Length: 315
Image (cartoon, rainbow, N blue to C red; front, side, top):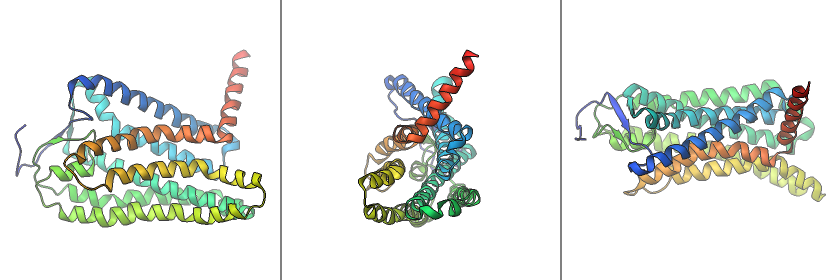
């Protein structure tokens, strides 16, 4: 397509994960399988938390929020490439592109903050066990979750406001599988310095570094408390209660660092697509597996529900 310098585009064309025609079928089924596993795993966690009274605790309340975020972010980021393969239409309107970017960014920021809230919950559970039920009551959990969702909703607004002011693009072909900030900045022939500065300052400090520090700082106190426990059984039990959460946190932050904090190179957009695919598809699929495989309560709840279902079938 001819470059469209000094032209305000009305729509974008999503190039997808790969431009090679022979890989399209393989990529479609791979993404579809991952997406279905993501839906199935997170819906299972969500239903178990909602239906099983044994899981009506702060930890599983935040886990349910995490499942909602994983389902939503995967749907927002992957629906276009799945739909484009089936319909052949890879176009997205300019407002639709901004909306997709806004919703995805909102969900991604919310996930970082929810993981921070889960870290605080684990800190109270291990370091202040006698006051856990008093501190982490239902009102506190609802307040923390609301702050996470609303704060992220507001923080992303400046990015969309600045993007909407861009007057021209070099091309309307986005070298990505959804509307993300980096490919949009690379396409624009407008002055992107303000948005890049905002992305560097707010994105690094408020949206990334602050949640990172607030998430891992409680683990300094958690580890210190675990080391003070006399019995090996007690230490193992304390570590077991937070191992799933720390695994998810490390997995997510390593992916984000590889995606956004690497030096810019000529093939950075291509490699960013792979890291982004892992972050938006594989990580949400792995989260329920990590919690269900490592968490005794989730496995017991699933067995109870399956056993109840079998009893109801025999009646």
